[in-house]
Figure (cartoon, rainbow, N blue to C red):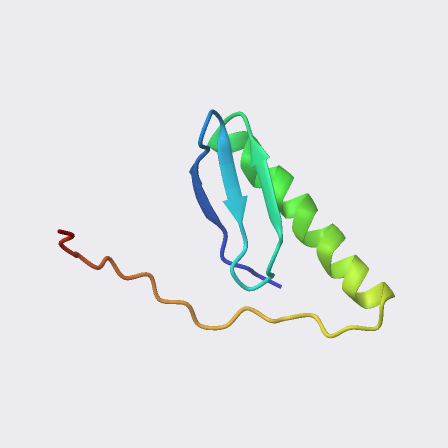
Length: 73
């Protein structure tokens, strides 16, 4: 299975990785490079927990990233 992962700079330090298709599946790392294997492990544990509980595993849906420019007052 393949999932899209969003990585952003953390509020204080490091990087935070989230998986939009798996609500609540979040991991982090000191660097982007460290965040990737951490989030991969988080995805695997998340899916294992769903399977153990007899719950369906969400599949990756088509995801389109679009930049939207807004102006705030």
